[in-house]
Amino acid sequence: MKRTGECHGARFIAFASLLFVALVAEAAVLDRQRREFVIPDWIEIVDEPVAENSKTIQRAVRVRDAKVTYDGAQVWRIHASEAQKDLVSNVTMDCQEAGLLSLWAGNDTAVDVMVRSEEISRVSRYLGQKDLQYQVVIEDLQKAIDEENPSLSEEEMDELEGRKGHRMEWTSYHRLEDIHGYLDYLAETFPDVCSVVSIGNSVEGRPLKVLRISNGKANAPALWIDGGIHAREWISPAAVTYVINHLVENSEDLEADYYILPVVNPDGYEHTFTRDRLWRKNRRRSVGSLCTGVDLNRNFGYRWGGMGTSKDPCREIYAGSGPFSEPETNAIRYFFEASAANFKAYLTFHSYGQYILYPWGYDKRVPPDYADLENVGRQAAAAMKKAGGANSVYTVGNSATTLYAASGGSDDWAKAILKMKYTYTIELKDTGKYGFVLPAHYIIPTAKEALAAVMVVTEACKLL
Image (tube, rainbow, N blue to C red; front, side, top):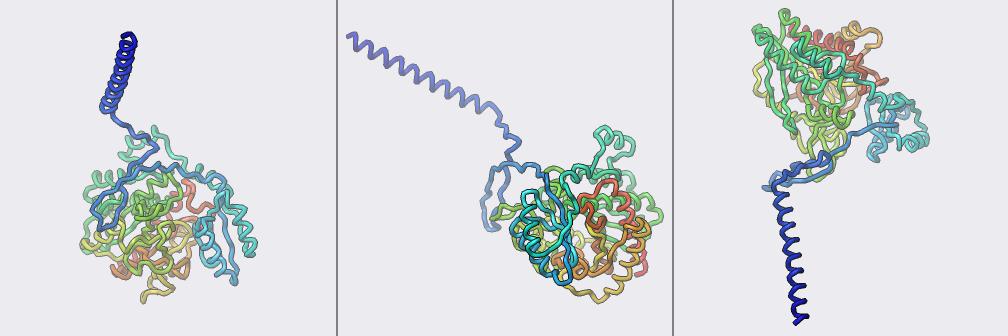
């Protein structure tokens, strides 16, 4: 009997222990149900893109991108003799494909490339083997980035907004919120002259805000002006907003209407502030690829997918899955299809290199009225030099011949499909000392050059 009692006691203790564990586990489950699950800030839940014929929505969890740094990276200029032009092009392409460098700018005589610290010795040896000469243009790229934009403090920005009604000024580069806030302020403050319309949304849902500036004169010629199609080209939206400021302040003298989209690529632009200063494309997630982004200036529907583009989503010149595949470019197309304005000019501001380029970009050809484009372009170049001084020399010419071939560009589309008379891509400062990381104290001098070009083209439009 004693053994039997011991067995019953042992069983009871074991059962009680199991019951206790179960109750604790159930309480833990209930407690977990009551607590709100907080996703760590380094994890992001995203909608995964799916094929068009799929009815399912896939979700994915991924680690957020860390902020990209360029410690030790340099910018080099590779020089090409007459006999080395094809060699430089081939070497640059091979190195890009191998991930050894990133192309910044270039033409037949010189190419600017960014080389990360871990690849410097390898790329240097390779160029030496090919007997190609180069010079270091930016010794420490991260240092240049760190010093580029000494922005105002939050207190200074609040004081500015309290005094002026908006946060825009032109001694620093501003975030998208400030730019859009400035447009809204102008529309609210000067409703007889300014109005704002969102012509669509970006991939990530940000509005594409166009400001119309007009004093209502009948049959006035209209000009389209945009900036920021390539995210890293900060001087472009800065210059375009400066042009806006001048036009509004002098609106009583206006003899043309202006439709201005300061930031064509708002997602990419914000990404350059928060994650990667040198990001170029939009933020489209490509189906079947780990790479992100479409070059919006290869995505327009004229000669799409031709020379100067790529079908590889990992390339910076990826043209997208088809013409107007991106909501940003599609919004511009639909805007023009619906607009009744008397458009005569299409000006798109980029950087860098100091060029005034006219179509065609898809091949080394020119439109029938290229002489008119050349003439007005030269007038604009003269005005820009007058506004900026001796270092403000702008080269005028056909895009593909003067710089490089690039199919699917907005300027070619505007000329061929919209039948715009004066269509220009203007590459602003500088010629390479700073490249895409132009210090903020150059904003106003560069913006004055952009304004001078706008005024010249406006005068030409009035004569049509």
